[in-house]
Image (cartoon, rainbow, N blue to C red; front, side, top):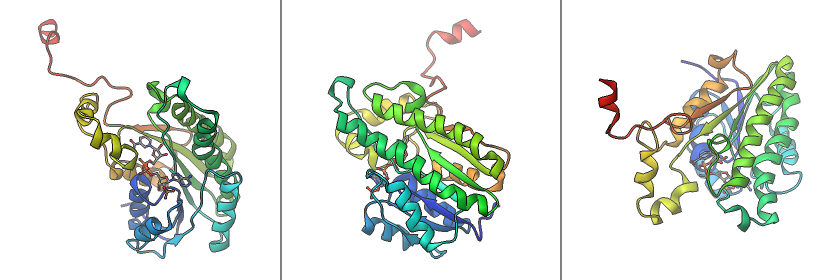
Length: 262
Ligand SMILES: NC(=O)c1ccc[n+]([C@@H]2O[C@H](COP(=O)([O-])OP(=O)(O)OC[C@H]3O[C@@H](n4cnc5c(N)ncnc54)[C@H](OP(=O)(O)O)[C@@H]3O)[C@@H](O)[C@H]2O)c1
């Protein structure tokens, strides 16, 4: 079993969903986890369930300079970090003609700018510690071309592109940079639609080869893979974790094909 004892991990968006699951998984593997997000009460709730002296550092990553300032605060608590999970993100479901400039700025500020500035500000401390692992949470939206999500898809495509570019820049320093592109994960991002749009759950399930939505743990286990030495020779990659959605044709009950195949 991989062991992260003695490692320090930062998880943004750790107050719920994929970030909460990732923080718990990294803690279970022995890492000391620094949890960030806006909502202190939620961060404290998650921290209370962790074992390895977790640290809570609230931040609003929509604000200019917030990624850099979050890194500065983190480095007041610890000497450096080994693992960074850039998970904080917001959705933006709009038809292109309904999007405002403010909405475009907001989703790019959180999903792209702060991810990059936090990474830039923490990378030197990773280098000093002999290397590290940065794990960016992107989305199948950056790969698939989803409807009514142009701004969100743009941010996630940017995350995958920056993942490859940073892997090139920081590979010589022993810093690996990878991204995970989740598919449909049942978190707060979907909660309202799952409860209010009739048939949504089943219809989306029908598009997934494994015929189920994902859960935070499905992503957290892959975060653990990228955080540990199990992935020591992997960098600049995007791993799609979607149960077979973006790149797989979900099978229905075969109608015509069986006759063709016999
Ligand atoms: N769920 C899915 O189906 C899915 C699919 C593909 C990709 N993703 C990506 O996975 C990541 C996590 O999503 P999730 O489903 O776990 O969503 P979630 O449950 O809504 O969690 C989002 C996290 O980001 C934090 N956050 C939001 N705005 C922030 C801000 N301005 N500053 C700092 N933190 C902020 C939230 O904390 P506070 O509200 O306390 O700030 C929360 O901890 C996102 O990047 C998302 O795009 C999700």
